[in-house]
Structure formats: structure tokens, C-alpha cells
Amino acid sequence: MPGNVNLRRITLRDVAKEAGVSINTASRALNNKSEISPETKARVLEVAQKLGYRPNRLARALRSNKTKIIGVIVGDIANPYFAMLIQGIEHALRSFDYSVILQGTDEDLDREKQAIEVVLAEQVDGVLITPTQKSIKPVKFLIDSGIPFVLMSRYFDDLETSFVIMDDKQGGFIATEHLIQKGHKRIAMINGPFHISSAAERYTGYLQALQYYGLEGDESLVVHGCLTVKDGYRVALRLLKRRRRPTAIFAFSDFVALGVLQAAHKLALKIPDDLAIVGFDDTFLSVCTYPPLTTVGSSPEQLGQRAAKLLLELLSTKADKPVQMRIPARLVLRGST
Image 1 (cartoon, rainbow, N blue to C red):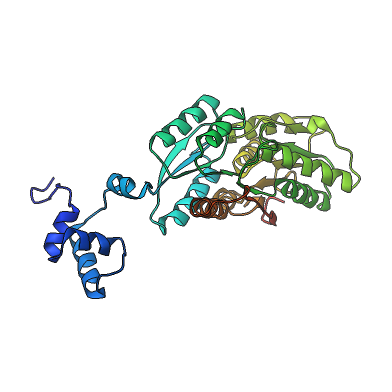
Image 2: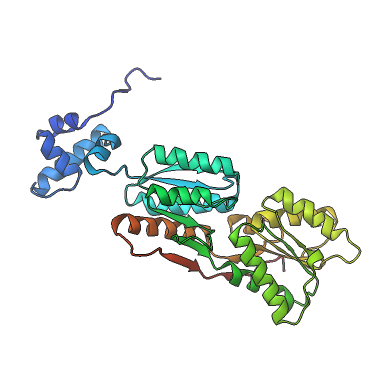
């Protein structure tokens, strides 16, 4: 490391001295308070930027009773859906000078409990969480803690909480309807774990579309419990090796659909001639496949932004009752159908 780099932390006292003002005046300028002239405020801000001053969050928290930190807890961080969700959250929070503490659960209940303990120990102002839904207890713990929080992508029927989710039932209907309108009758669904609300609702939408168009559901074409590319590949391979294989597959997510595409390639099936595939979530993966993936949903970044903004509203106002938002689903047509 070069010898002329100054590693000493720049303090508010340093800024005040360099700007030729009192510590109190420097603090007021940096916190955009009134009763100081615009010229003084501009000089203090210029000096702070020149010196590389960063406010001490701990000291600010002691003064304001706020840390300006939000805890974010999601499932599989390697899943592009969650990566895009986090990106949306950070984008929304950054303009309000909030930082993020990120925890991943890998859809494991014990890790979920630990993640909640970690963010609460950091005295976060609020929590954004995609629950594993393997138990109601972690979310009940958040309720009992009194900290503001918003559920993302999933919700509990029997808990009155704020949440932002996709209209998953509508999305399941749209995906299946599209495949039916393309002439498919043997439509498989490779679904997520059924205890997850989004999986249960997408399955309901799938069944409703079949019923609406007069097609009988075949439970042998439905597999629950899939969340990863590996899951999609394994289950699709099994379905597609049948004598009467499905001609179309609706996958729980783009991530799972990627595994379906790999299985089709292994079996030398042409997409969409031999097999049509619809994913869910509209992640960046959907335009990186060949052919590009037809999918349902809305931008995960948009959902993350909405959840973050809702949490900020809950932090600034005392809501009389939970705020619950469902984002409409849409079909994004690409080459896989």
C-alpha cells in the first residue's frame, strides 16, 4: 500500500476545523438543518467531500434512535430472481441514505431463524423478508419484536402482515392459458414446494385454466418441490422420457425452466416444435437461453423497489392495518413457445 495514504478516520471535528466553523455548525450543515447560511452549508459540504468524511452511523443512531439500516432476508442468493429483487431494494433505499444487511436462508428454517437474530442484533430499523414458510414461528417472532417488516414474494393466509407479492394465481392461469391456446393439451407443471404460497397459487391458476378450457387435469403431470436448475432438469428428464410425454411444461420459475431446457437438449427435443416451455418471474435468464424463454410475471426489481418503499412508509407513519400489494402478472412472449 502506498505510504502517503491516510488511513485515519476523518471526524466531524476535522471537517469543522477545515471549514472554519464550529462542530455544531458543521453538524447542522451535514444534516441539512436550518439556521445556517447557504454559503456556510456549501463550504462545509465541499470540505466534507474533499476530506472523504463519512458519518458515524453509531453516533447518529444514538442521537436519532435510527440506524438507517434495513435487514434483507431472502432464499437462494444464487437464484437470479433474488439477485434482481435485492438490486431493486438497494436502488430504492439508496436515495434515502439507507444501507442493507443481507442474509440468505437457502430455504432452511434454522438459517432463517439465525438470519432474523442477526439483523435484529444489528438494530436495523426494519426488515424485508422472503420467508421460507416452513414454519410460521420466525415471522411471529418478527411480529412480537415490534419491528416494522414487509414480506416479499410470499405471504401467510393466517397472519395479518404487510406484503408485496406477484398475483401468482393470475400468473399461473396466464401461463397455462397461453399453452392451451397454442394447441397443447398435455401440459405438465414443475412446481415449487407446495408450502410456499406462490407455488400453491400458481398451481391453482394452472388448474383453473385447464378447467376453464375444458381440459381434465392429470396429476401425473404435476410435480411439486422444485426450486433449482437441478430440480428442473431431473424432473423434466423423467417426464419427457415417458411414452406419452407432455408437449408443454409450465415451470415454477425461470431458474427451474433452465433445467427443463437442459433436459430437452439432452433428449434432442426441439424447442418449441417438440416441447413448449413457459417460465415465471421474467428474470435476466429468460433472454439468455436459446431460444429465449417465454415467461410470466413482472420485474423482480420492481417488486423489490415496491417492498422497500412500502417499508419506508411504515417507518415514517403508523399504519392502522397491514398494507398488502399484489403486482399484476403479464405474459412475456419469446421463442420457447
